[in-house]
Length: 180
Image (tube, rainbow, N blue to C red; front, side):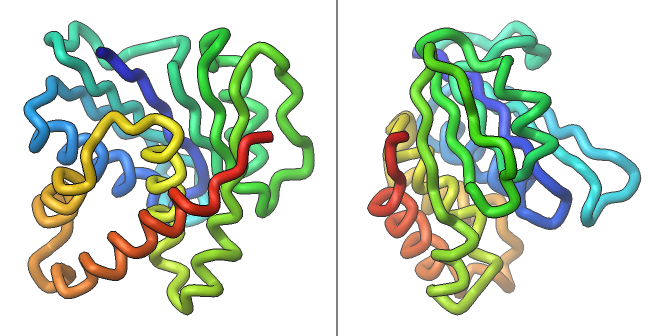
């Protein structure tokens, strides 16, 4: 099993931390991992993306032009990465701020209203964990116990008290993701 993923959005949406948590989760599960972040000098508000590869075999390179799964969180990312989903692959998006919906017919498309769900939960910071939950529902490549371990390894110790809230957000994302 090899899953090649790119997560893309604006800085401040938790794109890089979502990728890091996913990578740590795969590592805790005993998988081979590649994690390659990319962001502009603008940081918050600028575009950012992260490539994560989780595999049973050694990963030779994190540089890809096509992905099994593309997760997009803004229109710029949709415009740039929709075409990079492998035929038969998966596109997951939050429609908040998306003005042009995906058009491809040869891929599986899923929508998660993560911004609205995070607002309903009373904490915008769980937005990325809701999206991660949607991904893990659609592509269950990492078991929940390893996701919790991934959170422990990637979050600073002062934030460990928020792990239950993050796990709740992941479950919310799994429950609310919708196939288009």
